Image 1 (cartoon, rainbow, N blue to C red):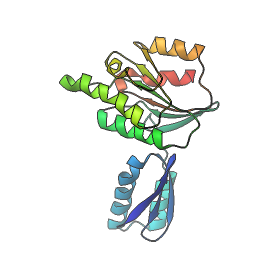
Image 2 (spheres, rainbow, N blue to C red):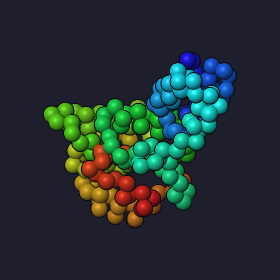
Image 3 (cartoon, rainbow, N blue to C red):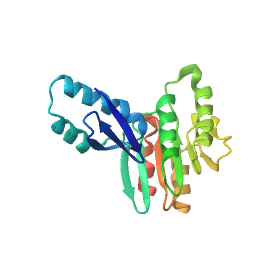
Length: 193
């Protein structure tokens, strides 16, 4: 089975081997392999290609897994279900590739990294700088290691401090990535965006 990615701004669009276009509701190029694998498995099990296309196009992410939320003039990519270095990097790359007027990342701690925690959190600063992100808001004790970024950033040790900042400094007209490990429950900041 062969398909190719056409675009991913913000939603993944691909062309199948039968020259059909599939417009997904999935954000980011990093989801291409998942969709291609699903289509390949469908073909293997003789699922009708029109039915497979419909299923892929109708799927909408929920449960804080690359979930798109519109709030006022902001577009929020809520990805606060979990975070590890590889998922953090691809989420920041995806945000950087979007054609948005203003790109902001609200990033919390990545848990369960054991002895690699500080080194992995420091990499976040590089990923932000390398990916055309306008501003970053960092929240949590571990992510403090990323605070030395060349991108305008603000560091908050607690969610409460971050929420207070957002109340006093409302964000408008931005595409905002919200990403952290589940234990941070960073989705609570969305109400203040």
